[in-house]
Structure formats: structure tokens, C-alpha cells
Length: 101
Image 1 (cartoon, rainbow, N blue to C red):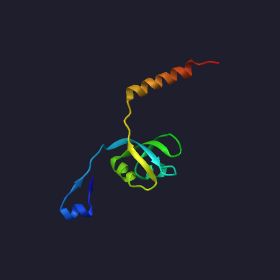
Image 2: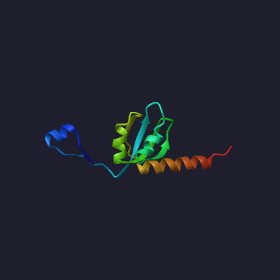
Image 3: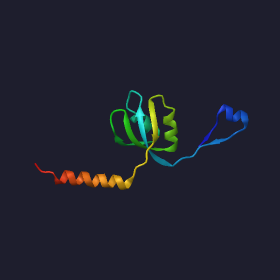
Image 4: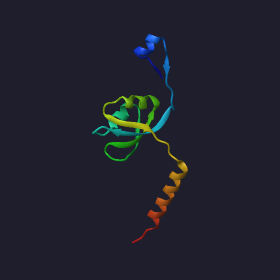
């Protein structure tokens, strides 16, 4: 992604940003749900944590777009430890299957 700003143009500079093609991000809305902003940025909701906080997959350009969205309070990358996630999933499955009244 190349940015053209007045300062860059005045100095004859070229600004290039790169990131992962697709990533997972924590998105926090400013007073409202960020669902429509995430979808408009090419993203998908992975997990809604509450009405204003959610995990979403986004293209890098969508992440940059949401950083400048006035309806978004914060957006940042999230790394998932798949080993720990699978351990937790197994523990939860065992607890759900192993409990009887």
C-alpha cells in the first residue's frame, strides 16, 4: 500500500506500508458496535466479546482503514497460540462431557 501525503509529495518521497494479507484484530467500537465498519473494511467477525468489542479477520488495508474510523476506539493485531487454544478446547470439552447432575 502506497500513501500519498502533501508532505511526502513536497519532499518527493514515496511511502510504502506492508503487512500480512489477512490478520486477526481486536476491534473496539466507540459507543456502538463496530460490525458494520469491520464488514465495510472487508473483514469478518470471528468472535463478538460484547456489543462493542470483537475479534475480526481483516485485510491489512482494512486494519489501516479502521485506524482512521471515528466510530472505532481501538484496533490492534491479535496473535493466537494454537497449542494453548487446543488445550483449552479439550479441557472445556472434557468438562462439558464429564459433568453429570
